[in-house]
Length: 224
Length: 224
Image 1 (cartoon, rainbow over the protein chains, first blue to last red):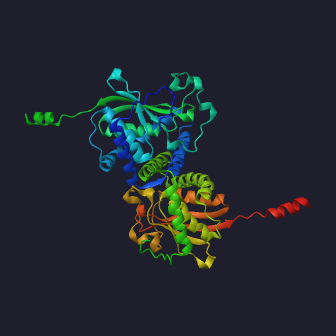
Image 2: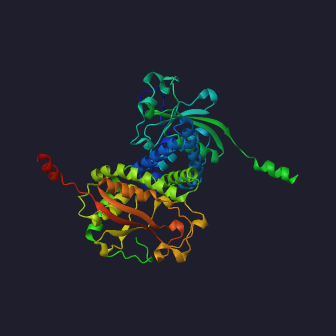
């Protein structure tokens, strides 16, 4: 499923990855469904509405889409844990696998690939490659928003002159909102998007903090 | 599927109605799908956004949802005609059957029932009963918006004091927009909604005009 090119290394499929994929598929089959085009068109209408509201200020639209996403992610995650019957995640990498293979499949009908794990940060950073993004259906952004090939993020370029609309930025919000609900604080942002002329759509993920409450400590201090 | 009560008469299921239902089911199976909860949550976020934009003015929100719907309906209908392979509709009643049994199933995964055909207007008016509305999932409107049982539209009451939010009004826009694209002008509006405390969700449909171009006549007049 991972497209060639773009400098990403997917690495071999792990057994947990393929078992997550099977779980995602099984969960997706069980869920109530609607047509993906309706979702795409409704999402398009929402983005258009925000572009009107914020008078074409892409940064504000990106932020608002992200905010809407965090609400949705926070809302979905409890139900996801119940319906997916996924075992507790072992670490951030495991959480990313569950997100990309089970949750994305369960809710959007597609899977992503977490690649390019950054070993220098002990696996706190990776890229989520989205071979298919159903929100993009029917969407074509104006040419002036597209990045020339030489400056695509995949090629390491960052010299796009204008502000950028990350059309599907709600997805970053959903991922961040769901993880935050699990007390995993993650920085999530689009790195490239086929709608902008990039070769592949990539979301970068960086673990900021895993919040652990030591409840026993609190109880002890209460008892003192 | 039609709930009892509410004074609606569904009439016997016609053979065309059941064949449309089978066609709707077959089409739905073929379509790309996503999770219905995602659609419901995204729609909820959109309605919330509009409530903020229009500072809680329900009439404006209803109108904007309707307008968004007409865009979506106009967009969906061409593709619907190709993918549903539905034969040309014979009349308005037939068009309503196709809409409620094939199109609603194909795009939302549910079917509606067109009932209460008004014979005094030669079948130009009916009610579309929606036993299930996936956009309503997770939604609860504040109590002050609900109509007391004695004034529900189903009981003929109209004395609800305040302005009304028709939460799923986008559906009316989608139906009107799709039919308008087929040159069938229809007045479409919510009559009752379970979210408002009504017993059933009902959308009223009234045929205003079927626009027919007599191309030959035009050609004749050009030739004169």
